[in-house]
Image (cartoon, rainbow, N blue to C red; front, side, top):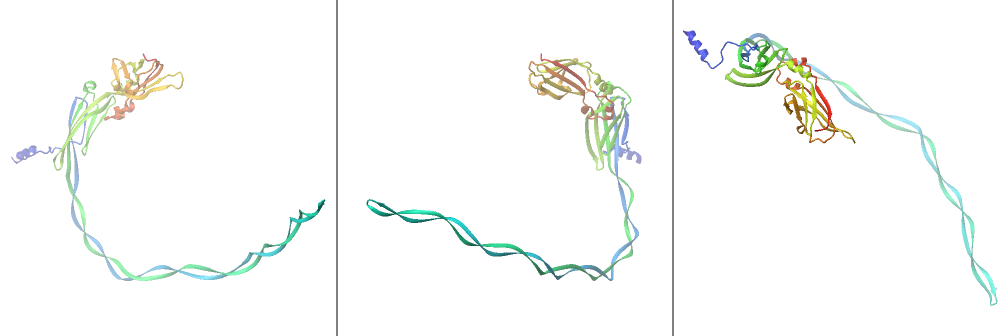
Length: 390
């Protein structure tokens, strides 16, 4: 009766069932939906404090001891030294010098002039050049050496060591018996239990079918991770939903839904075998045909150049575009130029180069087995032609 009552209490409790689920679980692609329960537990170690005999040490002062150090005093003295040598002195004297120059000397003379009226004296200016000299005193100097001696003071200094000693307390470590606390592990306590209820939906199971590919769902802490092993399909998580709530102080419940899409590696590898042909150029578009339609994600690049008879050719478009930029009708694909930044083309010759290749960024997004992409040959398919818009 007691066991029955206990069972009722356990199953009516709002907490999760006590049977522990694995933290990692394998499953296969044998049905469109899978449901798994994973569990991880985080424990903390419980310790108790015990006291064990030990030897401790305390510091005691026992007398004194000398402690010496070396100090330095700065001592200086002056010495006088005699220095001798030759020095140059200027010697000057005054020397007379006779200086001569030529000067003009003029005087007034009277000439006697006579006529019928009588005679008279007429003054006349008479000049001549004369050489005149005078004495000038010049100072003449020259250098004369003298041998001289003088006494010069010089200061000499040095550090003189001296020993300085003082008495300091002598501190020793004295042992004594004591008890030391130690932490002893006595068990483990559940810190947090995380239970994950995982629902996995295969969005295109009708294309893949039951193929036996192996999947692994793993719970690490509160992180969910799904991986796959396959040689025929690339699996990608295209959508996921997740909620979590605490059931108690140490119990957490996670509910997650993953939507997984499969892409055949043959579909990806066959992309490089597609042929592009029948390229046409309109005033606002480029059209072409694909030999085979594909569901593989791809991106393209368009290089459109206008030919000029004079000057350099004009680049109209040189940029990437996504596959959704193409408008398809059967095998015919049309790429509008306006979204790529090109206005209406002129009626001139144009060179068109178009290339398509798998979009690795989209293929790696959400991939749970991305290593399989290394086996895919991702060669671009190209189409080049020359045309006038029509």
